[in-house]
Image (cartoon, rainbow, N blue to C red; front, side, top):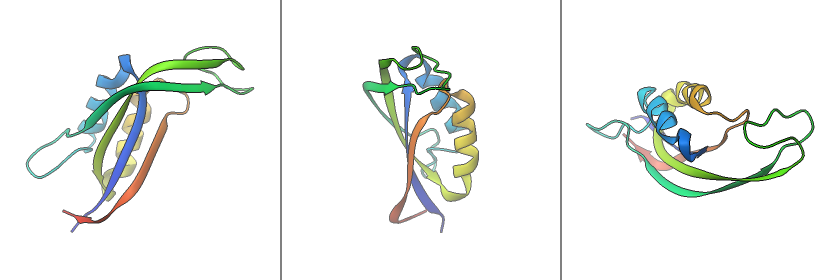
Length: 108
């Protein structure tokens, strides 16, 4: 039995397909005989970069709003590290926003 993690990522709309491909190729979204399984939602990301930041969008100290996509998928525990490395390599932000937690009681 393999423990599963839920993974949620926020990415600018124009980079969603690249991030989806990268994390899927690294093993995210494997469910039974399927790969690259995910769910996406459009939304608006908001942030203000602090001193020392190198923002991909906007300028230091200025509030920004960006059209983003929320990506949700499942990741086997042993693949979580490689999936996060792949996501960081495909994501344009200096600090990608992501969350991960164990899916209680669900094992493959």
